[in-house]
Picture 1 (cartoon, rainbow, N blue to C red):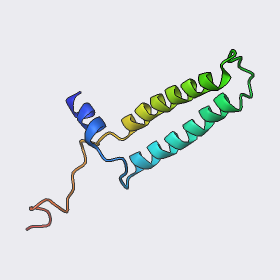
Picture 2 (tube, rainbow, N blue to C red; picture 1 turned 135 degrees about the vertical axis):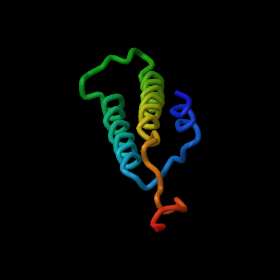
Picture 3 (tube, rainbow, N blue to C red; picture 1 turned 90 degrees about the vertical axis):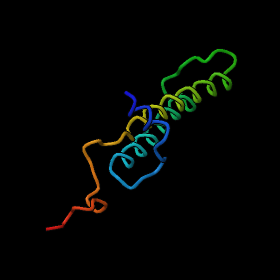
Picture 4 (cartoon, helix red, strand yellow; picture 1 turned 180 degrees about the vertical axis):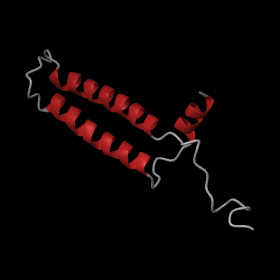
Length: 92
């Protein structure tokens, strides 16, 4: 659990690997989909008299939740190690 929280707060926002690419795609697509559902309202949700403020609060809430879920996708693979920085790699 300690490593997961360390990764959550200390990992960079962008790296060139498959986990980060999948996380960014999920982040963009889920925010676009949920934004469409809240702001365009194709299913006819009744937001009461304060329509714009309720939509703004819902948008902030789903943006925060999607951001947390996306950040969890960017966890480290503890089985991976870099062979280029290993001093004994390739030595006879």
